[in-house]
Length: 100
Image 1 (cartoon, rainbow, N blue to C red):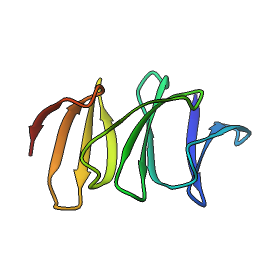
Image 2: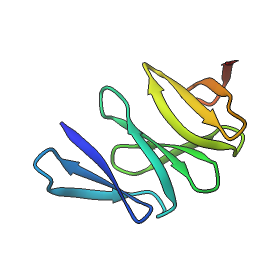
Image 3: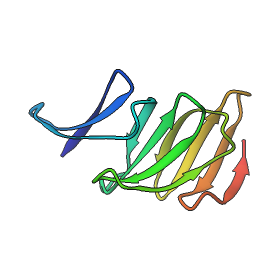
């Protein structure tokens, strides 16, 4: 099982022993989260964007409205907390399911 560590805006994928596997993202991350299978990573950037990346670091898509403060996996869906205090539930494709 791997873990994610933020280091000066970079997302580091590390083994549970602490060994660095790779860096992913563009050095502008404020939050990161693995999905349950550890095949995808959500990265919330300092510009409010949410990036869906493969575990290898390849960008798949950017989702949300650009006002995110954090994003977490909820099963196969994504919960995005916005700077307005709302939580958006979205599919991994970016489609809005509901706002709470």
